[in-house]
Image 1 (cartoon, rainbow, N blue to C red):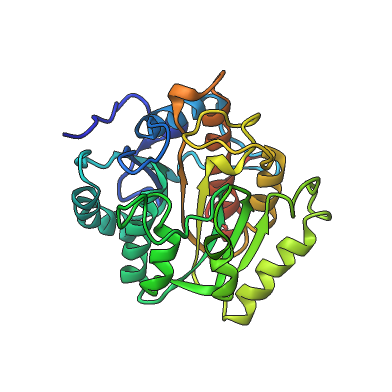
Image 2 (image 1 turned 90 degrees about the horizontal axis):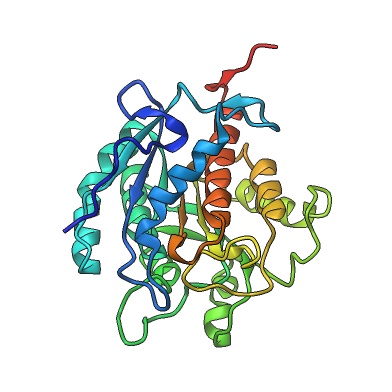
Length: 313
């Protein structure tokens, strides 16, 4: 069984994805690996609906719109009762999309990121750098007795050689957890900016140490392909109540947008936005934030690669 994609609900009201659209979004409506509240399977639809508020989608910072360059590939038709079956079904669907478009994936819970990284690793022929926004480190070696889930994917990705540990950056981490899990990325050579580390830092100048550290790591390792994975629970529940595992003390929307805007020129190859759970949202705050983050990412990539449609004065 899979959840049907509603063809009339397209991200930013873009056209269906085809060979003429260099950028595309696709939904992965799966939440079979959550450990608290389900509902993220409805995230792709909610993010698409929230994106319609962006109207002509001209970004106020980048002054471009994705419309005309962006297509919506719908939701991947996936089974929803088995993590292994879902991931196995994903792989042959993801590959052709990667080769045809610069992809943004709408989740879904965070267990979808592991098979996506496997697909990118296979396609690119090299491990990826990663920027990971999250309240949780996702480095546990098992999931309450299960070998894999939405809280193990970082550990698995590093163990499988899908990513460059020294170019793996976590931002917003603040949940409870044993030290071995919390510090795993740092002990593998990566960077961790906890929720406490970024408190009160919102402007580009205030965030400069974080931004410069990421840039320095990228340059030191030859600017490898970079993947962005954004768990909506990186935000404080005041900004994103609609998520399965809310954690107080989180980031603001302003902080996330500042980081996305300032790092937009890095060699991103794709992104996902996960863990939006509409049943627990209020006034569409979480889905609005998610839609804005995906839109900002797209506009930043397009503007700084010269393939977006600039607006006439």
